[in-house]
Length: 332
Image (cartoon, rainbow, N blue to C red; front, top):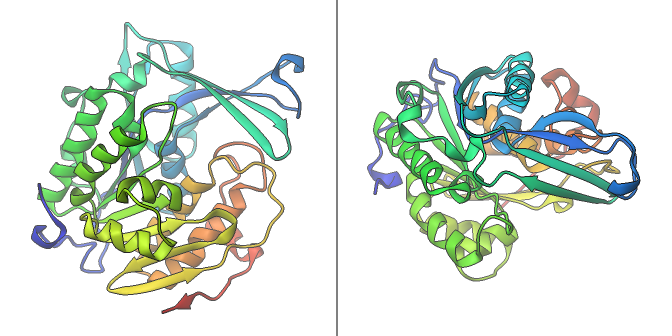
């Protein structure tokens, strides 16, 4: 496996962004959500939208001014049309393979209370999990400014896991930075299976994002957020960012430790906040900004998306970030 020390230096690593877009690969589902709080069975209507970690990040980056391409697979159905249309409408380039034998996956969000959101997934053997290596034009990966991948795709199917690992390998050979969000989902796989997959993936990535609970899965033991970030580096990642929600975030990058407080808000819907955080961080990294600036923008974007319902609809544009203020990081 390729390691950080043996990877060729990309133009982005050298501080000058490549000309290609950020490429994300993964499943996007149709999202049906209750417009009102309360039990799902007592809501008489459902709103129709889309959601998926990788496309959430792609849209977040695009709203911040970073060109992006989303690659995925959808059914040859009206729901697949919806996925393509919604992502394209945000200015993201869409490469969507159509599956003639499997439908587009579905998730239903139940807003039980203002602080309790439940999500029901209908995705097993659906189109998104059937994306295969032969579906991918890897020249898009080789010419990207960065490739963003997640652990959700590793968990969905062996074939999609092969795509993710191959994309990371191809990007590494081409000197394209790879970003990876652990994004553990207990409904998709066990902790032990996830740990094994993460440890295969981490030596292939330049940037890893995780919650502290997710980082403990990869590390195999608990610890403070900064301890977990250091352990992620020992497992092969180039820089590690631990997302802590309302507690902010910490990072270890360039041999230094960083800590950033969260922006204080009263959240409406926290689903998608982690993806928003990733988009904010990566946008600044591609612009050559310092780790301080990356973290400040990341927590601001993450906070912003929590202030409206939906996984991505509340993602901010760059000129809106100042309305949430800027907090100074603590460097160690």
